Structure formats: structure tokens, C-alpha cells
Image (tube, one colour):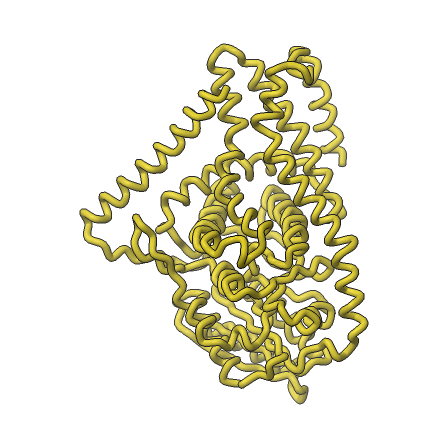
Length: 483
């Protein structure tokens, strides 16, 4: 709070050094600043915020009451907890499986824990915990060992193990990452939503995190998860979330046991006009999301149930780590975006379809304010740039305060991190738009093989670089013509 108060004082003081005409609502420059540049993004953000408040405080509580009225009848006949682990710290692995076993024993639902792992050390940890905590109980443990070829293979083998068990139609499967800790009571609080909503194929929940690293990492992750709660709640109103996070999502067993679903998770790919066939390495959560979206299933969001993730940034330097993570996240999003758009608003609903389209638009509109301010400042009106920064500071402070609607506290660093995510994130998205073949796991040195002839790779690289540079130049030219 002291940091936010100090920031507010600095913003207020800055108003005294900005020429009065920049703060006059009748000034053409002011109208340019908040009209042409900002009105679209802020109105779109306001729509999401209002939808999120409506969902969290009116619509979802009704859903919760309806589910609770069903009582025990809404619980699945069996639940499978599929956990995948690879190169996770031993202390984290022990916490994750301890929490999973405790929740499996406490939920009162017949439960099978399926551990899809690579390393022998993980098997020892899991077996020791099971012997100490669950021997003699009804809970079953199934361990599937695979080669270290990636999470997609681990999930596929886990799904096949579940399918081989021939689960009942009303059974549920929770897909849990190796760094995700289940909060007590999660299963009984969330699983009934699948049975109470026959059209729902899956759901996901809120997330909080424990971050290993410096303060800037903790603030960045916490801020992103707070933003996620608002966006997911907004999408929950349409019953179509924009991703089924791999950290913890629950599916109907009949969905994950379908050989077509398993094949998509393991072998998902797209055919790109420039890069040819791109097999997906990362982004299994986007594959499962697209499968359900294409199948016409609803995907629910449960905002009052949360998981806890243990975050290990891939590099101690914030700039390098955030770049690596953004490249992975945004690459996954863009590789699935075009085929989702092709489904059309009739299949997924107009609002959801427009949100997917906005993923393509926002990477450009988020840069227009900065680009316009730089162009006008370079043309002899430097005060516009300072006015732009003033506007950025005010709006990011307001956005930070709005995050208090979903979290108990915020940090003075949030306004700066919000702007960092907007500008740098947009640059990364545009870069990935022209480099969709660049994929890499953050926990293992697995990259997409490049089987093309050297000359073909050269011209592909030239084409991607030329398209990237030309698009950025065109952005500045168009903005320059407008202003």
C-alpha cells in the first residue's frame, strides 16, 4: 500500500508539469490520446471486468446452489487423478503427491491415482508416500513409466492406462501438473459440476502460486493469476473458457478415453503455409481445449475453488525467464488460434469467437499508443510522449486497484508489470506470429526437428523475417497516416 500511495502521489505531481491543453477534454491531442488509441482496449477490458463481476457474484452462486442441492447424487462414481512429473524438484514432487493422496483419501469418492513419470527417483517417492498413507485403503495407485519424450507422451500413456480400466460414463479425470498442489476439499467442491451440467466436457479452476525466485517473479506471477481470474470468470459466463490449463483441469472420463482425444493430445499438429507441418511440442492444454471446442462441449470455470502451483522460473534473470515463458505461452496460443477461428461463431458462440479473434487484434492495438506517441514526439511535439506516459500511469494504477476485486492484496510493481506485459508481450506475440516453428520445453532440451533441405530452410527464414519486419513498418506507417 505505501508503494501504491507513493505512485499515486507521483502521478498527481506529474500533472503540474504537463501543459494544460493535454488535460483539456476539448483538446484534439487529448481526444487523440484517449479516443483513437485507448478507447477500444479499455472498453474491451471493462466488458471483461463487468462480465467477471456478474459471473462471480450472481451467475456462479446460482450454479453453486443448484449443484449443492443435488447432494451426493452429483458426485462421480469414480475419479482418476492423472499426474505427470518430469524434472521437478524432489521436495515439490513430494508435496504434490502427498496432497493428491490426501485429497483422494478424504474426498469420499472411489479414486485412482495415475502417475505418469520418467525418472526412477519419482517412482520411489510416490511408492513411499502411497505405502505410508494409503496402504489398506480403497485408493489405487497406477504408475506409468515412459521415456523422457515430453508431456504429451506422458499424458497419452496416462489416458490409455485410464481407458484400459474401462471407467463408468459418469467417472471424471483430473489432469494435474507435476508442480500443482490440490487444496483440501477441491474434488468434492468441483467435480459435481460435470454431472450437474451434461453438456460440459471439462472445467478448470482458479490458481494461486508459490514462486521460487526474486520479488519481481512473485509479483509477476501473482499479477498474472489475478488477471486470469478476471478473464476466466468473464469467459465462464459464456461457458467457453479460452484454455483448459494443464495445471489442473477435470474432464469427463468418456472424453479422455476416446482414442481420437488421446491421438490429438499426443500427435497434434497444424499445416502452415510457410513452415509446413508443425507438430506441437508444448501446449497440450490448447489441444484439449480445441478438441472440446470443436466437439461442441461446454467448458466451465469454477472461481471459488483453487489450486496452488509451485513456480520455478526457467532462468534467474527476469527478462530472460519472462521471454522464454512468453515465447512458449504465446506460441501455443497462436498455433491454435487460426483453426479455432475457422470453427466460426456458430460453433463456439459469438462472444467466445470474438475473444479468439481479439487475440490476433490485441497484439497490434496494444502497441498503437506507444507508436503514436513516439511518432508525434519525433515530429516536434515531445509533450505528447510525456502525456502518454501520464495516461499509462493513471490507467495502470486503476487496473491494479481493480485486481483487488479478486485478490486480497496487490503490489506497487503491478502498474509497471502490466505495462511490461502489454508492450513486451505484444512484441513477443508478433515475433511468434512469424516464427511459429520455434517451440521449446522449459524443462528439457526438446525442440522441433527441422527436416527441410538447407535451401528451403533459408528461404523460410527469409520469408518469416521479411514478414515480421514489413508488418512492424506497416504498423508505424498506418499510425503515422492516421495522426
